[in-house]
Image (cartoon, rainbow, N blue to C red):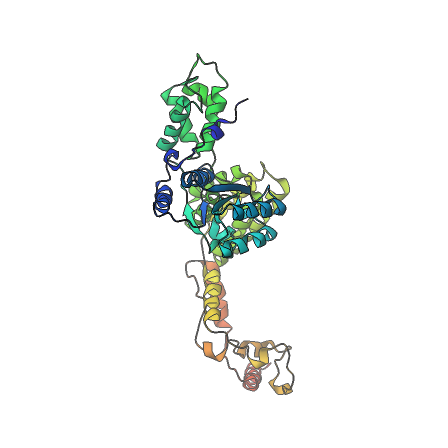
Length: 426
C-alpha cells in the first residue's frame, strides 16, 4: 500500500521546494557561508515548514533528528538530544513547538544556551505569543506564507506526472486542477490530499472534469483553526469590522470563525469587543452581548450561530465609545513611568492618624470634596468623554452638576461639607 501522496511528494532538497522564496534565500545564504543557527519556522498549515527544515538538513548534509512536541515525551526528547550531541553538528526539528510544556522546555533550554545542537522549531502559532521568550530569543524567526494558486497548481501538476506521485496514471482537466488550486487556500498538503482522493475515485481511463472534482471535494479549505495565525487574524478582522460599523464584513468573519468551531474563543472576543468598543455609548448592547454569548454556550453549535449573529449585528450597528478603554490605557502609561504612593487618608491602615484626619466612611458629601489622585498628578485627566453619544453625555452632565472643588486636606473637606449643609439647610 502506497504512503499518502502528500508524504510521497515531500521535497528532499531546497531546490524542490515550491514557493517560500524569502525563506529559501536566507537558508541558501547560510549554506553558502557554511553557517548554522537555530530557527523557528512559523506560518499557516501546509506551507512546508517541516518540509523546508528537513530539506535544509539534507542540503547541508548533517545529522537530523525530528521530534513532535505533542507526541514525544520527555524521555524520548532527552534521548534525541543526547544523540544530537554525539553526532555534532546536528539539527533537531521539533514540530508543533508551541505545544511544549514547561518540563520539555526546561530540558531544551540548556542545550540551546550551550549550543549543543541547532534547533528548527515548526509552528502554526504566532511565536511572539505562543513561545517561551527564552526559546524565542535564541532563534531566528522565519515566516512561511500561504502559497499562491499558481504555486499550488505547479505542485499538483508535478504530482500528476512524478514517479513518486500519480505517475501519469490519472488524467485531470485543466479546469479541475484550477479548482483544486483555488479551494486549497495556499495549503499544498490539502491540495495533495484532495487530488489523491479524487484520483482514487475514478479509473485511469476517465478524464476527471471540474464537475467530478466538485462532487468529490465540494468544500473549500477554511482558513481558520484555533491554533493557527489565520484564526487570530480572522478574530482581529471581526473586531475591527464591528468597530468600523461594517455589519456585512462582521457577519462574514463571524461565519468564518463559526466554521472553526471555536465557540469559547468567539465568546471571549465578542464580550471584550462589547466593553472595549461600544462601552458607554450603549451599555444595553453590552449587556445583550453577554446574554447572547451565554445562550450560545448553552445551546452549542450549530444553533449557537443564531445568538452570535444577533449580537454581532447589534454591536456593529451600535454607536461606539472607547472612552473607558482609553482612560485605563492612559492611566497604565503613567503607572509604568512614575509609580506614586497612595495618599495617607486613602490607605487601608491608619495607625497613628488622628480621628479628624481619618477618612469618613459615613459622610458621602466629604467623599465628593476629597482629592484622590496623588499630588504629582494634579490636573491630569485620564477619562475623556466621547461626545457623540447621548448616554455618555447624560453621565457627564450629572457628574458636572454634582461636583465640587476638591482638596487633599481632609479637615478642610469636612469643614466645607459642614458649610454646604448649613447653606442648604440640611
